Image (cartoon, rainbow, N blue to C red; front, side, top):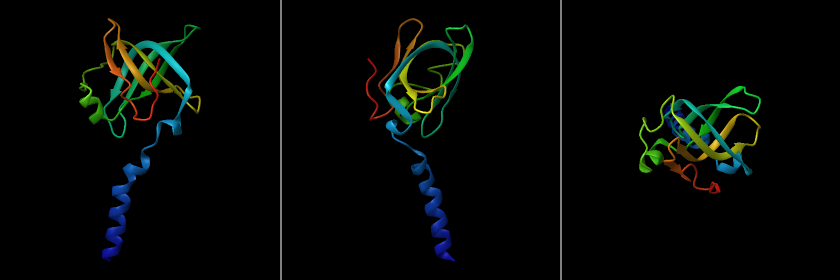
Length: 131
């Protein structure tokens, strides 16, 4: 019976590790993107925080984008708090599109409407710097 408990413990402990991925597994280095819009939500969660933003496309349609950020711990080390970006904030995000073509990107740089850079190349240790 002890081995069953040990096996279950190993599965539970290893699950978060299995959920993590490399930058290259999900995002395309050859597809940089720069989007301007209004923040709708910030989810402070592991293994990566998530930010959502409404962007008006070239046809005038409002599109909600999802951005993967660094882990909350990495964001805090970079000076972020849960209130660094709030719903209603106007920002510009530079990053790289998801390989699956969805409205998902890896946020590499985040700049406020007044030009203050609040995230710079912090998202992933193997992510290339946006230029």
